Image (cartoon, rainbow, N blue to C red; front, side, top):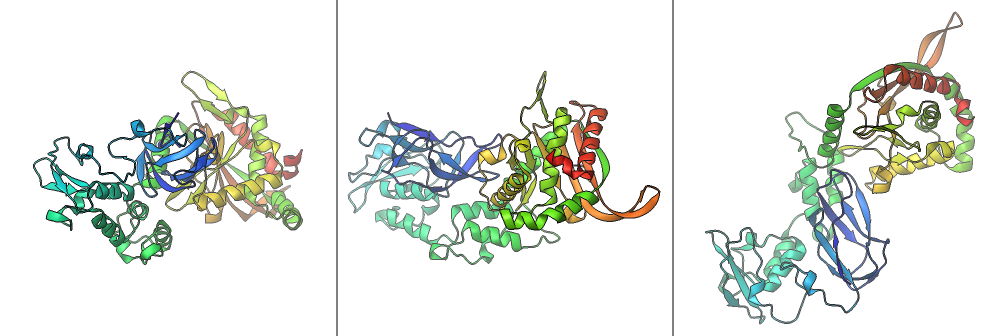
Length: 452
């Protein structure tokens, strides 16, 4: 039995998605669970799986189209079964027969005045009167082409070259060819505040593509007096931290850690690990393993507050806050205690690479129970990180720097670092949070405890 495939909800804040590409063509066989298309949400690009096995009978949303959640994007069914009953008036199947005039599509109002006008192709053209405005005459082929290319047919009202100024298919296709940028590029440009008129396109017909816009955005410095749109990923991040700040009771504790032994251990294993496993161990990798070890002794920091209960998670899944173009994402390393330092290092690097390439999927971003955010590379000595929604604590990692420290009555230069733990005071009090931070400090100062 044929079904409509709907735009899925790929995140709690998702309202719409942009079709990036289809992996199958109409008429090709699909299997339930295999990747069928790629969709861009406010945060990342994600592959969407086919919900059923069958044949991709009809694609209802083309690449670059923006589709609200739960709206139809395709029809999947058996090869020969009828699907007319699943097609709305704006989604007619291609046919060589003339389309009846009753299939006219409303533009923006139900007050439509329909007439008929014959086009040389043999198909009848329909007209619509928008409110009290000007009538718009267009052939069914023109309307179909407009739908497929995401063109509002009303903007061609004065450009029709058919009999009596009617809009025909060629008018739509000519307009599409004249567009300087793809619809997706226009959306991203609006989100990032990029002026499309300044860009050289690299797409087909020298059109500006989304990649052209993203390159321009990454290269363009922010200047005084500039207005930056608060939308897309930037808006999604803003809404998430605002919600967290309003709902959780944030308290931040700061502890100074002597990282001298940790630095020494990393230097000892760095070359051997890189030559044997092809991965370069970072301090974030080591800290991630140390955090998991410390959580095992103080599981309250690995929890979620519900309406009338506190859930202590049975897995330690650590999110790594990652800066990307115009925002922040938090990919998650699952079940950290069961993975070696090498495995954790490889996984973090893969996730960060996917994040910066816009290739993260829903699985990469889900299931986090604790988050680490590292600003050490920017020379930061202390800050107040905001808890990731749905979690109860987040660890801020600062720079490692040589400082004079009194050790056994003697002043020595040691490699020192601050850790900033923000916790939700509704879930835990200061004492257990401080005990966790103290335990983490002990592990990092004796880093071989990570492997015990």
